[in-house]
Length: 89
Image (cartoon, rainbow, N blue to C red):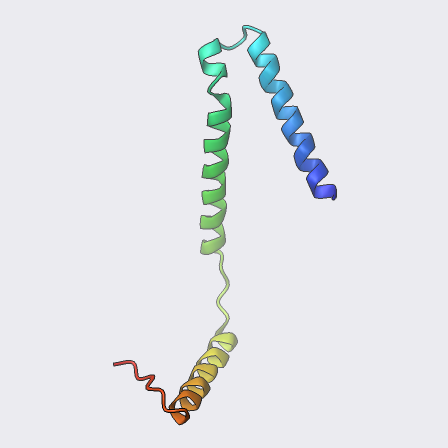
């Protein structure tokens, strides 16, 4: 519940800032109407950046890779016993 309150507070603050920019003539009105679009595009770019950074820092787990290979071999043997062809050809 606390997380939703933080998000709502942030959205209210951004909306208040945007409305204040609309009412004052600090920024030209044609630019002010595009600010929500710029905000959404910026959030998308930030999300892509975070995914890219996460992929670059993805840890390798050699022990888990060995266990996965063993599981694959066991599954192939089990499926071959059931009469299912699982060859990689």
